Amino acid sequence: MKTVRELSPESTEGVWTVQTRTSTYVLDLSEMTLMRAPGIGSLHEDDKWGISALRRDSEDIPLLGIKSCRVGESAQFWVRAADDPDVRTWRITTPVVSIERIG
Image (tube, rainbow, N blue to C red):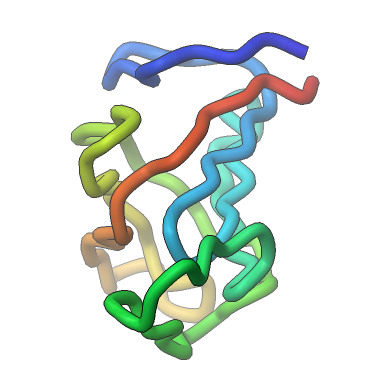
């Protein structure tokens, strides 16, 4: 496993976990999918960060691109709705704690 401080918008390969303050995201850059596991790996040392429920949690959704994904900052992922190819939106996370390649 490889740990990095940032995934660039040009990243195109591998399967990565991005742990945030409240959730864990799994990005498959070969298949271009993103899955969010809310509350998994969260850090609740204080009550500053609540866990939100988002549509399609724990399901793979089409990943169109990465705007930013850097430890210490909120990640921004451009995604398409799994059930409507015409709907696109941003997934903006709580601050990223770690980024690790798992495949």
